[in-house]
Image (cartoon, rainbow over all chains, first blue to last red; front, side, top):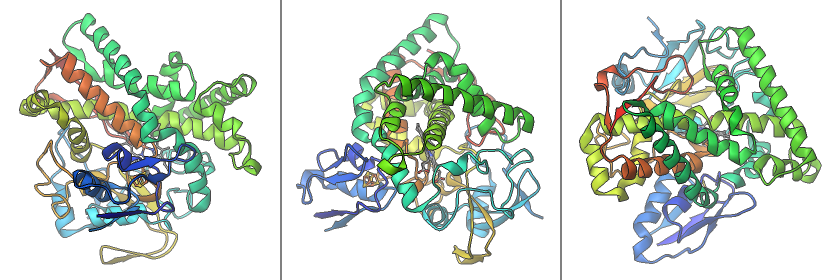
Length: 64
Length: 399
Ligand code: HEM
Ligand code: SF4
């Protein structure tokens, strides 16, 4: 699994961090997504798929 | 005949029968608003999502040909001069959003959890002391979000009765006369200006002090008026929405007590249960209006320039085309891409806060009052009327 995030689209809703805090964070100065791990291990895949499905800005794209 | 909107509904928690019919047969429907003006109602998931996320459409209904929602709605929430002070779209909106959004990150909200849990515990203790039955909405649902947002903004929670009145006049579409709304807005405006003057003289470590400290537009910050309106908007937004949602969530979970029992047995379902309550909420209020400054195609229909569209997120959240067994409340549903917080660049800025508050309230209630039950039959729960944000009048409970 390879993750890309679109900082321009991101609206800082924080869904990704609430669901998969090991993979995503938000910048302190504007709340925009930070990708901590672009190729996370198996154990994170279910959570990451959920973040991509619910991100309100459609800013998380998965390549599997 | 044109359908009257909002669609009347006698039940507090069930959707009106019209939704399924509209989604199936007339997903782009003509409706008549309380003002008598015409609008176009959207009820399908894909259509609602598309329109909410479309950056070309405006949230403001101040164009001369935009529909008025109600008779008094010339100073109301969606058309007031004040609403126009927060940028409506594009880069200016994004800049505003990022300046304010840093206060609402998931990490910051998680850091507030222990404090929220303490407030919830104390409010529940006080409710228990007063004895049963109790109104959970007045005892817990309402005060909790107010304490939290007051703390973030650095305004005294002691003034919460006034905030409640001011938000109610802004959010209620039918209850007040125009003169009452204008007077309340003027008072609210004055209150916030005095508060900001005090913060300028003596800054604290709250959101408003820091927005002031960020400087004016020339330093990448906001104008004084923008800071003021942002403060008012956050106080209102952080108020009725979450407060009412706490009541509705607990009502839905107790309406079929097996749901409550399942959560008692497995509290790890709290997160998905909160999302499912947000999706399942059939009483979420008016929906979101959008004004079409240009011709736009929605669900195969071309809507002319100047159309006012009403997006019913609650009807969209029950769309079988988007959710399996959409009319079943499934505590484990995942993923749950519901539209309760909107979609796209304008989707709710406070959603991490709202989610955290809802999760904390549920966690503390399950822990402290496992025997909680409704004190009246579900059929007797009453809706709050006229509010842009839906809710229950009361939530009578026993334990
Ligand atoms: C359960 C509780 C809540 C619900 C259901 C809710 C719902 C919504 C929705 C649907 C929108 C989208 C408006 C649009 O697209 O035009 C929105 C926007 C917004 N919400 Fe919430 N909200 C809740 C709680 C909160 C809280 C606690 C705050 C913060 C104090 C907040 C602050 C805002 C702000 C500032 C916006 C405007 C965002 C923008 O224009 O970029 N909301 N909310
Ligand atoms: S969920 Fe999407 S919009 Fe929200 S912070 Fe993460 S990437 Fe950004």
